[in-house]
Amino acid sequence: MTEKTLSSSQRAIQALRAKVFSGELSAGSDHLETELAELLNMSRTPVREAILTLEGQGLLEMRPRKGVRILPLSPDDMAEVYDVLTQLESHAAECAAAAGFAEKDLKTLAAAIDDMDAAIENSDLDAWADADERFHSELVRLGGNSRIQAIVGMMSDQVRRARTTTLFMRPVPTKSNEDHRIVYQAIRDGDIATARETHRQHRQDAKTILVELLGKHRLRYL
Amino acid sequence: MTEKTLSSSQRAIQALRAKVFSGELSAGSDHLETELAELLNMSRTPVREAILTLEGQGLLEMRPRKGVRILPLSPDDMAEVYDVLTQLESHAAECAAAAGFAEKDLKTLAAAIDDMDAAIENSDLDAWADADERFHSELVRLGGNSRIQAIVGMMSDQVRRARTTTLFMRPVPTKSNEDHRIVYQAIRDGDIATARETHRQHRQDAKTILVELLGKHRLRYL
DNA sequence: GCATTTATTTACGTATGCATTAAATGATAC
DNA sequence: GTATCATTTAATGCATACGTAAATAAATGC
Image 1 (cartoon, each protein chain N blue to C red):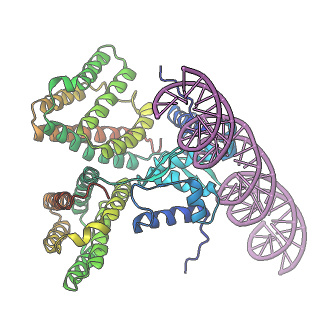
Image 2: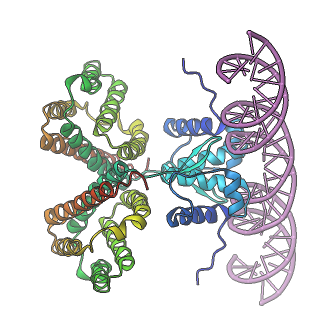
Image 3: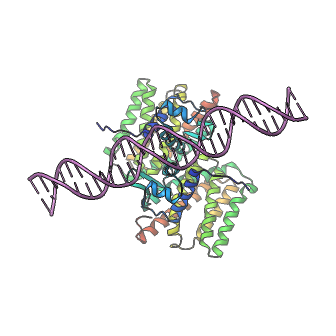
């Protein structure tokens, strides 16, 4: 095993991230540095460093004397996030298709798609969401632009926060996997235009569905 | 005047940024926290906080026991940066065109274009670069996506670092401003496709020119 | 000499203390 | 009752101290 002793700062980052995603630190809530330090059993110093880092990733905001605010996401915010994902991921799909990967280079991508099918069979939404993330993450990796990877990672974090709430509100995403297969084939066949355009449309659909869902359920923040 | 007493952390961020851009802290160089603290006349604490922030913006990297490394930019890195800019800015141009701005909303954009013309007349490359930045920054602002603004801002910082070196190596960018005018008109006329495609091509050309220039001059890092 | 171990240095990570200053509370005037 | 000012509270920003572990130097064995 790759045993590593994480620094307190690193643990703080992980722990805070986890608590934000789990909702233990809910969106819109404020927390004093002292409170978080106590919660994580460490001094304020590493907590402050973690806060700085997470602020840079858009998860929270330091507001002097008012505490650390876990950033809420409005439907407009989600639209912004999805627009960034749409542009950068479709570019990644384009690049991946242009790169001329062999089928064996694409096995991770294919596996994610198969897992999604299986998850839908079993009506296991969590497994589906997990595989979906793997697909998108691998797609971006294949795109070969490390900065796009980093940015998409940050935006995906935002989506992940919303997912807990939204995942069970929407219909089983069967259409979604058809898109994934088309993108996969386009990349394998070097069909640049199809890879890009299919994925672009795929993400744009996801945005529309989500934003409408939020509107329908009167969710103004999450 | 808007007089404000900046915190030491804030001053550290500004000062370090300035020193990176000016080259006083040159790309690839390593610096101990103590050294930077001394340089900025403050304790390590605010310096560390600034380092964390700037690390999140991709300007430097904390390497325990080896010092803070000012990240060098390879031609491949520049290509990555320009690809992100190309995707996100062309999307912003598209959105701006779709938004149906009145001519008066576009005066900042028009002013930047005029300034670039004037700068070319005067062979003032610095003024040109300044106006060029204003154009791109305003374009993205008009796009209306705050996340894209933030990301483009970060990527522009990377470009800015290279500019000191590259600005005087290349021919006067006359063609560039033709593109800008076309983009401007397309936005004003609500011609979404032209706005996007012209700007996309504009940025892609810039990438090609820069990468070739770096190759020609055997600049492997900057 | 060269390799390996031991000692030393020192940069970093974290805890702690304190001054500052924004916010909250209370007092006073109207 | 309200508004203004003084007072108190306490969260933060920063400096400082210190233990730890990495890197370097020294020492030992072969």
